[in-house]
Image (cartoon, rainbow, N blue to C red):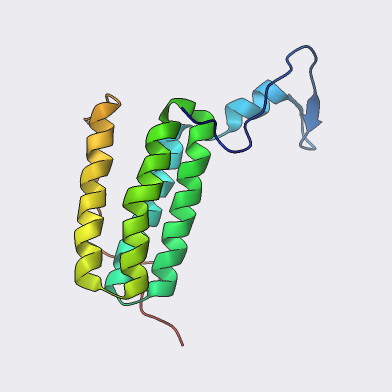
Amino acid sequence: MSEPAGRVEVDTSHTHAASNGKTDLSLDEIARLQPSMARLMLEIGERFHRCYHAARAGNARLARFQLSEGTKLLRQSVVVRPKYAEAMDRFIAEDLAKVRTAIEAGDVAGFEAVFADMTTEVNRLHEVFDHGFLVWKVSETPPGDLVLEPQG
């Protein structure tokens, strides 16, 4: 299994404290404040939802941006759950690469096909990691707080 980027050996022989101006926090307390896989997945799902609807609206720039941000979050997620690193690396390199290629080609029908395949793979991985009760789908309703059509 590959090590997540930026992963270092932790020296627990001493402690550090940081202040947020209101209280002092240990590194362990700061670590517990980091988002869990479940929290990250909510944002990742939102990014892919936005990617999907932007691509369908012909806004490749916005679709690429949302895909890129979602991919960054997937990479961050293996920091909190390193057991997913190998599967995540493969998913990014294979499934998300196909989505990115379809966006770049401006091929809406091709995009929808590879996005559907990606969604199938997401749900297969949920099964593999004993989370088959989490069946993800993209919302049929575009996000109401974002202009999806290309601007300028």
